[in-house]
Length: 357
Image 1 (cartoon, rainbow, N blue to C red):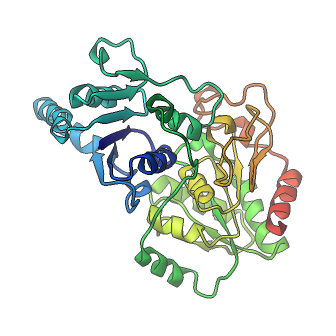
Image 2: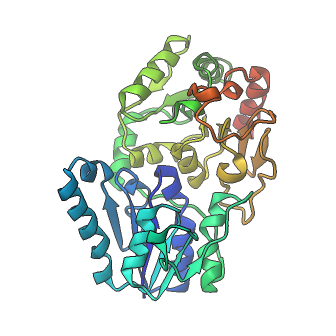
Image 3: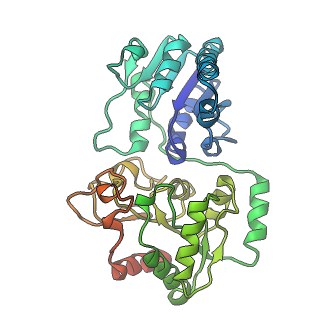
């Protein structure tokens, strides 16, 4: 049995596909399971023992070519899947590229979202239902229902190497207990007020007497954001921003007592590590993206907004009627008002309860 999964989305989206991979491997223990994804997201599935091959599409590299060269590259890429003789192809997103791969793969079973586009006519033999108010973990498992495969587990997994652990051993020398804070998202509209984040860091360090370790991506925007937050701090957290890979960040997170951050891939990594998550949500909804507790089989995010919890994890969100809007900030500003003036007293109470749990 040869199976191809397609997930051309962002880092966190790819990580949340791992429950599907686990269940497919349980049902087809001898299957070759390949996954096609975007460059930059592969750390979420590499070293996963249930995956045979990770097929990376480098969008930036392809787009840098002239029109003729780019067209040739795209055609070569599409037809490269046919020679693998997949028996099942599952496209978990609604994009055209995944649909075309499914169509040209010539697999007898092709599962994806229905499209009215002429290019994607006859791309699929079976269709996936709409997400509606279901968690992304649960919608990623919809193909199992199409295939008549029982759902045995909804556990999210991430893997890293012993070398990653060694690097973290050096970075955390003599640090036994700490709070991992990842304050930044690549999407500015998901970030909370810089001064509020600084107050949270100081609260953990000064009042809870718990060391804080900061992480971020290495891009200039995120580093600048971290530096601005630190200027507002009176404490001296350990700043590893821009110094770690995604897998090293996962290895670091596994040792934390608590994770504090916004709706990002690192939040999902922390939940996969079964490290308690305290996450701020603004324009995105916890019903779709809340941190998933691996001990649960059903989502407990029943509301579209407001403070909610699922097992060990908590989501802090206001109760505005406009939430979740799914927009890039209020009026296209890249800043979400619902994340700018949250109640610090309630935030402190939640953090203290979680640290003491």
